[in-house]
Image (cartoon, rainbow, N blue to C red):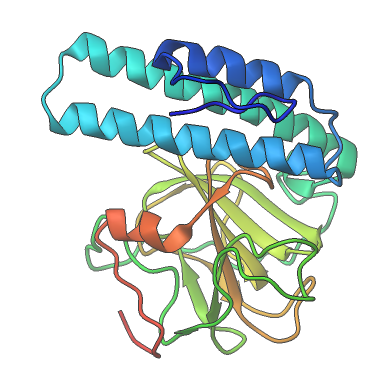
Length: 265
């Protein structure tokens, strides 16, 4: 692994894994908290990649039956990267007015809350797709005039009013409205990742609520910055914009398969 410094010069040799978090934190600390800055976006993206490499290393150690000490050290390094990214994005979100950072309950925005949902009657799988009868439209990292930079999630094209479900068990971190994502729900899962469900027409959960896989969290819609009804689904390392990872590979790691064609999972 080669680490590129803040000036862009690559080191001549691979750095010890123990040094990666410390160097990464120094690089992040040097970036001004400006969400519109190219430098900020690049450093945040670098931190996301570093976290995913650290997470993969933890997985490899566990699969190879490494010693508990090795796994614990690798997990500590992963958490150090995530903690610094979290603080940076939270600060930036507060400064930019991201409702997930400033109004996570949605009370100030007067979001359209509907009836509280109940867990599904039949036992669902541990993980599931976020909606039904969809077809995949804009994908992760897609380019286009609709986005300032690149698309940060996976869009599921569905009719307005289609039920939207929690992909896994977890706790509702935020229920917000009023920005480009429109009405949205952010859920924290047991593996530490967060999922975001945006452009909803109605929200059926509340901040702090506990959910099971397949539990309805709201209805799809066309709120926020959209050209038509769809569900924007995102997977993040933190609750905040700037920490997204590719959602379909993440779902595949949970044994959830989604296809481009219209399907009923």
